[in-house]
Image (cartoon, rainbow, N blue to C red; front, side, top):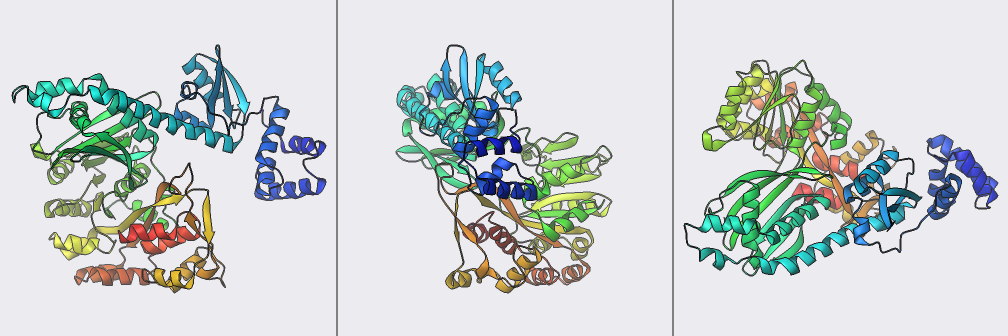
Length: 585
């Protein structure tokens, strides 16, 4: 059912929508770029998407629909779950009897059509539409969900018992009373909808924060916390009790922090929720980390590694012994980087073991151990046990103390490849951090192969504002990096020509839209990869400061995080303000 370029060209010429000259120009561009003829027509603005899709629909014998101004019934819209609709660009817009009309971009996607047919038990009638039409319709999902949540709050909160009601049951009965509250339908519906809303918003964390008069719910989306909703104070007790039940925590413990986890499973998604509950002045604050299960590991390129940094990392991954360290603050993607490396190393010929806190992603053929300090299973004791399990490759979730550091170093010395993380701001900062832990300099220089430092920056959406740097902006950026060096890097990476400089490059500001409220969507890493060369080893042996190690690494060609970020900004992937935000925060 695909429309061939020649067939499309003939119809457009017959309809007078395209001239012979325009057709030749488009064919030439399509051949050169190896893109479909129809895509080239849109790029060259020789045809509107509406006219293109109408023509394709006519050729294929499929009705064309434009839903940009349509308000779709929420019950019909929800027949196709939002994750499926977004992933496959297909939406349900009309139902009559046992028939369901669906608008889509690819009528050849028979697998998705068959899936919807089986799930809904309806006859599926495909209709061709435009990208803009799909975008506008997808926005109606979030509106539907927010409206649904508002209705639940208005209808159900009044049914939740207050703190006083529970306390009146007496101290001995508190746990039983809280369990009853947690099983009440209003509480279950609110928590379920709150989780669903967070997952569909692509939130990585949910914060439930009690204040004197209300409960604030915030979602962390693409690394930034945003207010999601405000609930009446009355809802606090039931929400916390429900989450404690799901995570198998003590219901009547309000003075100490508690940690747990539970699973969220539906037909559309499967998540693991890691729960942390902390006593605060106005009650108990809940933070839930949402971790998608079964998601594929990213390649190093997808994580943002490129150029010589990628080459150095790949070369050191292949070494059978030594220590690879990933550094950065909490939430900078260190663990994801190590998992991606493990995925590359995970073959039948090696035994891989990890000790983590917590086990964030399950990996087949990898022996993963969860730290449990309450029973004495720490990073150090876990690592000591793993060394008796005949491992080839070890991953230690974090080096926190001298004992763990010495064990990891000794494992690297005795024929193992060891991966771990450290909380330092720069790659060079990992060296003095290990020295502070009491590790001998000669051991560090003998074992550490490569050190990665990273941050996560948000990606710009397709809609963005182009601009050129002013002298004032260039002066501001120069406080964080050497502009001449950045220019040299950009020339080396073929981002700019030999005679161009930063003034000649188009950079971009985020442009807020209904689909991207702040102009960004998703994240990727900016990295600096410090290769431990012979000269760096000499500096380590001399107990040299992190600044001098950094200076030597730069002299040997290491690109710093801010420089790597500016390269990505010059390529239009992110913005300069986003790079500076994550570097300076």
